[in-house]
Image 1: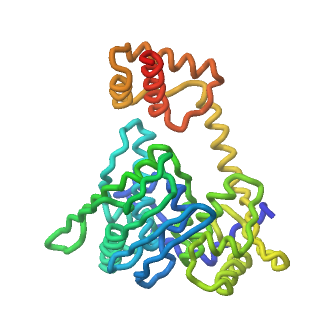
Image 2: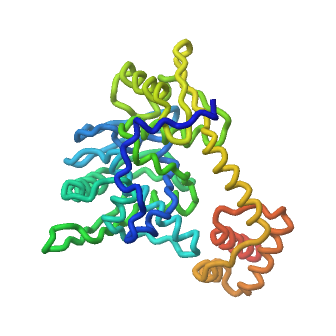
Image 3: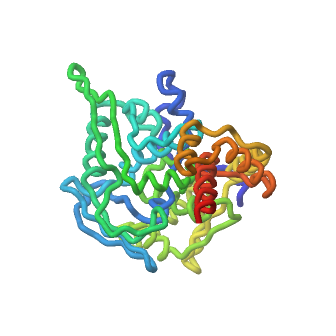
Length: 353
């Protein structure tokens, strides 16, 4: 099953098959998505304005949405959030402190997400900002270990600088909400396949998100169609949703996973593709090799360490922290800068208890 090649007939044609010299750095950024919105349906799957106030519930978790006059943000609007998260994670990996405000070149964004670069695409970008900025939601889903009962959004504000002569936007600035930033700082993110942007239907994107979140690197993941339908947040009737699942199963074009629909049990099975397994196997090997030493700390991490443990020799703390890490088995760290700051807080707390 996992040795079968992926069918790409049902994917959108690549609009930008070759890297654009002006946006080569953007294209090299690894696509990252936040896990809370992969697990729960924060985005509408409708291509038409969805202005209905609605509530999603699953087990003991719930989200209430209050859309703007432009409607709820769509799963295509989410591309902006994915792009912002991906670039912030890339900056963190380079040792930089995560910026809350992200500067985006609209043209680079279009290339990255396999969109057109014409006037309609710039208009669509403005509409996306309206929906992302205007929609508020209230939820009991914890983003940072605590649930705050308040109306909040995905972005706090956005500004778009436009060239007066050409009428085209040149620079976009997005200030992400505290909720989104907390998921980034906790590395509560997953890598997406670049073909995610080539999926033609909103429901296919949503199913891929759920498969990527739940199947992960497991040998398989199974789920009842009724449960998958509910978790997707799809407003279509079950019959239409089941037809979409069958279509995915028959054409086998979902990135990273084979999809198999079993009519007798009304279940869907996801199996990782061979290429997906190879990539993650290689990544694991690389992580094991790099775990023999910790990279240097960023300057901002040193400063925050000083603030967390005032009147303690910060470089002595760093030496102790590295020695402790080696003595406890050299476990890979998702964010070594954050781990060091946490260590400083712990030591200061113990010394003053």
